[in-house]
Length: 301
Image (cartoon, rainbow, N blue to C red; front, side, top):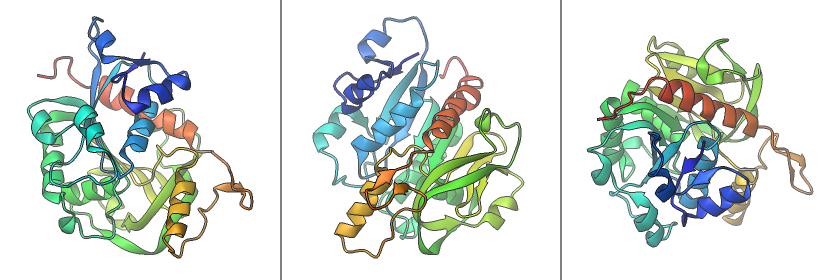
């Protein structure tokens, strides 16, 4: 089944060229099927790139998925044209009277700041609180996962000695959880962050479950006991070149940064080994099916 997006959003042509089944919103309204309603709060500076990555993963499902893109009102976005935001995004004030089957809160390049010092923290807290009563299942990614664990469970983040940057192996910690259904015992996830959460605090909580762990990256896939919240500390949505683009960007800024670990087959020629996308597609598809579609009410209200 298709992903439903406007025909003139940049992701439409990109995904159509990849033979991904995308459907225009006009065509979708003519079908007698209730699509799954997914809200994406995009906090990344590269919004067009991030929205395309997430829509690509959400399309790998037999479900019809309707996407609503959201950006913060309390922070002036600098890296995305305002015309793009006006045309394809909504503000929280425009959607807070609605209910959604699923929501995704992305990462953001603000991890070295205290949560309360982030310009849009109060608004983000309002959105996270909104999710408790108005979203069937919410997926939090990277800094978004740290923010969600802090807001909902009081679990703080801490600074790493050096940036965790690369592709790392992860081991499943449970055999039968639906989110990892079909996953190998060991799979790979990209990480790019300067901070981490305490594994000990996660394991000490009776209301949290660790589904995937990495010796290098720690607790990487965590869920709430009631399945309403999924926390991903990595960036499974990343494209082949995403880490390379970050590496070149940091080099251009004169930062002391090492090449991403376990990323290049040939570091001299920058040949990339992509070994994380099959798990990413599987996990997002499982989330939509088992944690959203199978449990969300037919009438959202």
